[in-house]
Image 1 (cartoon, rainbow, N blue to C red):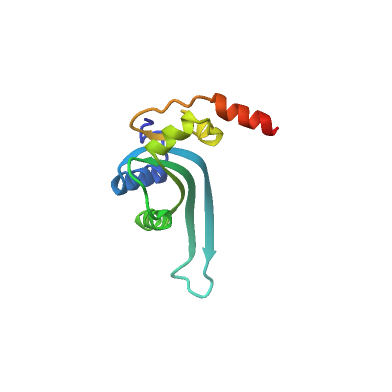
Image 2: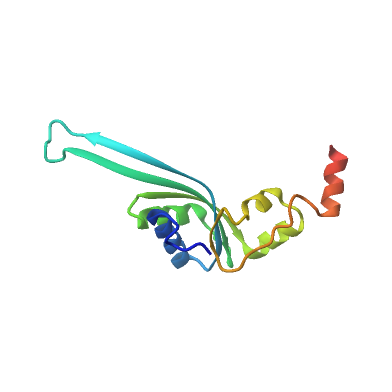
Length: 143
């Protein structure tokens, strides 16, 4: 697991919120972006210049139980960060991930690398690109 010191404070806050919401196995970062909004109020000098930073994170979230409503989940995380960090999540259960790894899911195999790992209670070992013989023969036949 990466320490929270190596993560930026907004991402560390998102991880802490997600850990409180679900029984978490691991989180992997797919992508992130930062958007800075600057507003200048001429007619109301009390407001002056306002600069606001917003962060967006795309995450693969692996839990022990099924997350029934991802939209509500993402909205709750957004609200609990004070509307500073927007989160787009892809949810899988641990059993579903293990099944996909056994059957050669290339998307999952590429995401589950140590560079993308943000939080992990137990490391999953991806088997690489579609080494499952049955799946490989089906793909080869199609091509």
